[in-house]
Image 1 (tube, helix red, strand yellow):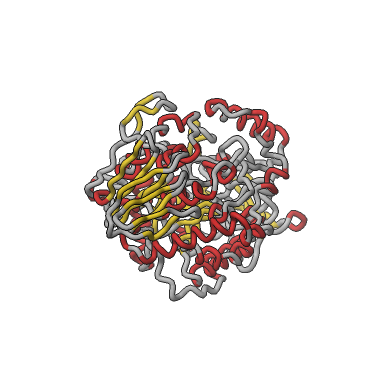
Image 2 (cartoon, one colour):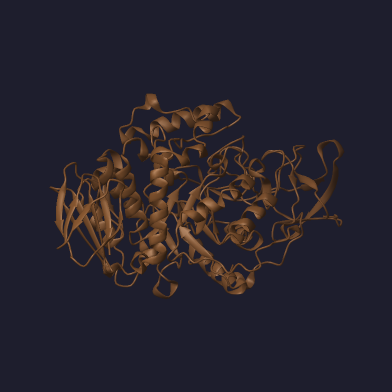
Length: 591
């Protein structure tokens, strides 16, 4: 099904449920329920047998077959009492937007900032997050990326256990607060990226299989796979594509980050991702503002972001974890697990010049060849989104520790320099800009004791291959694990926190004023890596980045016409004639 043959608009209480032989609509709260019969069409959609007024806030759900348990609507916009309870109607058109002057924000040249609503502020709400937008503007952020916000069971969660994809969690303020947040971002000149999960559903509150063939018998890392190419898959795909449209149209979101697309099993003639790209491009043309699709993929395959005209899926960008791994190893010397292949400093040089380190090379962690080369002659560098820290690379460590715990101020500034002055689209993770002392740990709040126990045990087994000590892994179910992960905004004004914040502000100004830092040409990037001295350089469009990853001073000879645009806190000495002296762990940008 394509944009042109989308089914007609359905009524607010219509339901796709080809599995049951009987469905009834339950209207009103539990103590005053009205039951309305429903009739099934040949297409598996059920419609109330009589007109049902839909004005105002209406609680409702469905009685399936002979069950007396009211189930929530798979397309519910609100779940005020939790994912197991009745849905509540919400009309997104009831909100009066103030972003009429907003024309969008393209990904090219932008800085992305990733945050988790529940831990970004003490309050953990969308309205509270909106109060921090001036801080984000101050460090040069263009796009604010929210970890998943849809409904999940419990009081707090990373967001990747969502089960009702069309909702916004009440813990964060619900859909009205979400609209206020997007509106505030746009009025502050910031775009919004929403992280969405279409590859699995959470373990509690997923009633989709009761209604129809939403899932298949196969499993991925996180749960049952979504049915994208089997019987009934056309409506399942429509369910996902309508969700994409909801965020971009109803909630004015500017971009979607698509979680772990390598787990989307689809043998259809047109892959779901390509179909998504087609529909989003059409919507972008209609709305007359950029709409961006960013894939998280473990495949290192540029087909995802190759234009459809050239045989690709036509997505706009994808994450490159290879950049993170190369930077992390260069700074920390940690080489366990998947970090092992990135031990030579030349790995960082290759990533910066070629986009991927594993581009068909042997991956010792996967025990197989991995990746596909990037067409560096034609692909722009901004199509790769990179980070020196993100929710996965911090939160999936044994204790959720940030690199600020083991690196000095110069090293942290070097990480920022590589990310913000490197060739790719930079993404920052909440708090990194001030070397936040708070960890970001994996936390859950499953009400079911057996599910909580299984989650905790699963975390420990995941860390075995990384060689981390299972005895130090925090219990995800312990409420303190969640509380520890909340940012401490009182840190910004003093000590190393203020030093690092100034680093990010300096680099933000340079990105705005030095065209070379947003040059999208791979062909302009030339790197060197001296394994002995551990000095790394990157020449790019008339600028030179030089970083001393070593523990001893290093001397370089550079173009005498260059001047220091930026130096990490300890500073470096550039003498007349081009003699550059780099203390240990110091990095500079010359231009």
